[in-house]
Length: 281
Image (cartoon, rainbow, N blue to C red):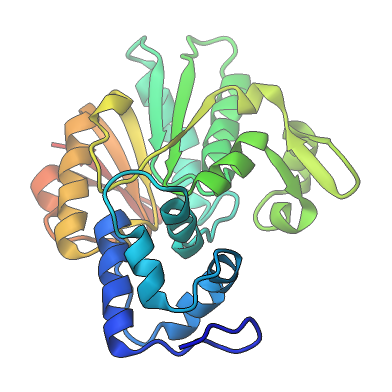
């Protein structure tokens, strides 16, 4: 099969099965049936740039133990980076209006992990929430907030670290008021997150299939709209690992449609209007 840049690739069943197996083994993503178009659209340029004609050849090159630049490129390309500011709104309102106040009463700094940071919208949203809480509580014992933000995709992490966004991205959830308070104009059509927001966030590369015990321990973990891409077995493993690094009574935010099997074994549900958050048992 010859790969042509102007023609959609047709992958046979064997090639497709091998690539799907590689993807799940490497990063946990469970690719459904009949996703040829997705593979073709995301890997076309990589295959062309590396003079690779078939999907089977690509799999042979990347299906190996350890880090490899081509392997990372393929994983980056297949990772979904759908994100926006203040996604679903209510988790961040509850976090700001209720949780930060409760956690501040301990007298200790507050540590947060954003488990799928993508291009930075969610961890910077969390940092904006912390800044707004701080301004609102100047006369009280405000506690410092630190945020570890991880993603498997190295290329998207570099974008997140830069903290520079075009208006098209900012229009997806960022109000004009917050734009003017927490961003400064960078170049024509671009805005950069201000240092007081950016400095709270520590971006790191992480594969959720691997151990993340070295990250530390956290009061709150945001793992939203991530588990839906994984098998039930991997979801359960990740939940166990999250539970192990949450501090006693710590909180976990999941996506609105995520209710993985075994969740109630590790967490109790705390309801708020109109959502839920999970507290470590």
